[in-house]
Image 1 (cartoon, rainbow, N blue to C red):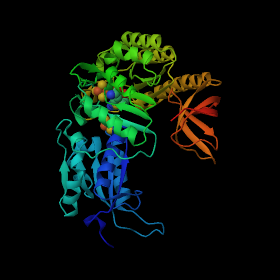
Image 2: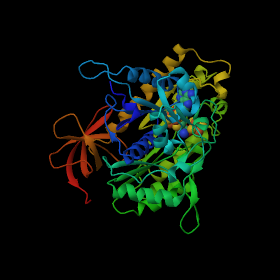
Image 3: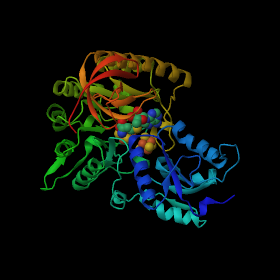
Image 4: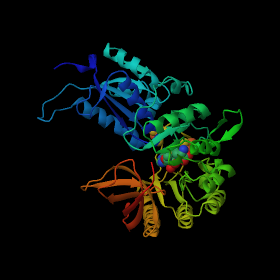
Length: 452
Ligand code: SAH
Ligand code: SF4
Ligand code: F3S
């Protein structure tokens, strides 16, 4: 067996977790491709990068089962093949560092989310038989060291504008794995957006753990918030749609809300996590907003953009959560009428304050609450989707579907929409009539096309 680890020629990047990890994964792939390596599947790659997530225990544990599988790789005939060089990147790398190779000695490289621009040098070290570990957090220096953006395979692109978090919610690992809150400079973002559009992007989603806290100075030296940045992107010819995620309720300022009423390319969608409907729990979570201020933000956004699709995140079973407090979450959900929302069972994370709080909730109670919450959210999602049936709207076609001639794209409200039309192609922004709504996707009939 040739040990390809001494000279890796092919790679595969597998990203878990949030969209920011997807963005980092793409940039790592571009970096490795720039070194002459080609991208292939995980079964045959000489180098596999596991770009990990540490947010909940289940997410963090996934990496170890993946490492085990990679170490015992087989080809199509069932013959054992050499294991790849294994790099663990992302938030587990940051949180666990040197613990990872101690637990999984097959790991050759450990690289944190702020250090991955050094990946090529680390691959060279590993090829020479030296284990490489880098979890430095020099805020933002990585961006300047990354190669230019590559041509897009899909018309939708992510663009990280803000990193890190200073909010320290008591359950959350992000401030520890991603570091302090920083905003990337205006010109770097605008240049990258232009490069993405030149490379075929038609929709850009601006990313940050607290994206609406982004601030900076424009080319005239004037202070700008996220809304200013959105307005600058709005002027890029060839870009059709702008989105942003994730926002914190406290940073939802007037200018950004106004942008939803005024900027045509800004899509009517807002992901605004709330976590709980109970003020006592929100306080224990250190969320720094209460249920009333969250309701008030939604009301302001809806006044500016009545058709906005609202999304959220919820945690059930935070330590000490009573039945009555959980009912307050259900009440908030029924008022907010989410178009979609994510809900999670509380997962204690070592090093966070909530992990050692009294009154941890029994798993069976969490299961039951999660089921009830998800049933309520699903019903609202279904109602939202149903209400779009018969509407004429635009869909950006992003990928092929399972059926012959079928293409899947997104509505302005981020719903998946299926169309079957021989004249349509990936990357087209088409005009459709929504014909049917299922629980997770819509089907539509195409009747027009917007000029490219
Ligand atoms: N910055 C965003 C999202 C952070 S992580 C925000 O402020 O909301 C994404 C979601 O994961 C969170 O919104 C929260 O709902 C969930 N989450 C974070 N830590 C968790 C934990 N320890 N257990 C369960 N869910 C968690
Ligand atoms: Fe985590 Fe809270 Fe920061 Fe969101 S705002 S990333 S939940 S600490
Ligand atoms: Fe996970 Fe890190 Fe994102 S912990 S959710 S990959 S910021």
